[in-house]
Length: 253
Image 1 (spheres, rainbow, N blue to C red):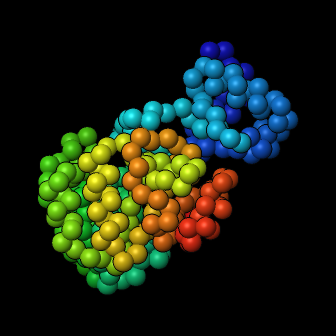
Image 2: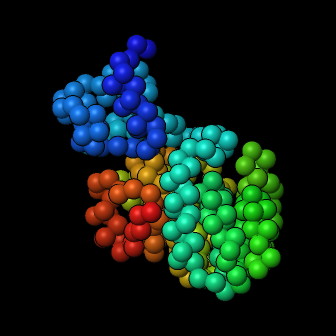
């Protein structure tokens, strides 16, 4: 497509942030709301953006996640900020479960200076990272390994995790939709995450801003099941109201 420089800048902005409101784009680009809406319409017609009420996000599938290698670098700075914020709240000498995902892997790196941790995980990447911390005991869940991202998922994994009750169940998700549902793409992965939530005395969610208003197919949980949310930007409407109604403590890194 032949986009003008403003439209390319708009597209790059949405790609870097995941989702942006029309008002934010108008302010960033120094143009009117009408101009932004025309640009969004053209980019949406080309299949490059998807509109939602009041904003826009990168077009994505509801049935398949972004490839793991791409997710490793996507929003890396925001994930690193989230990881540092989470690590600052995790006390020494506590127990955690960390699930799969590039955000929880960033959190594992931020926990390398902690002492007295006992971490259960179904993520071989998390286990590898934390095994470099001699003051941390790592317990790896059983089950088949998903080769593309070294995740361990399936019924054996669910049964293994049910043996534990931990201080903090710390999960990442692919999607937080505007009705307050947390969603993901793989049913086996979702079943494990639901079990992790059930085994935590507190449940913490780590999700960068691109996860808001992103569609995914399978319901994992509701915001009301979460105690704390760590993200890297102010959540767009209607999420502040949803978080308040669900009594979720939101920390913006």
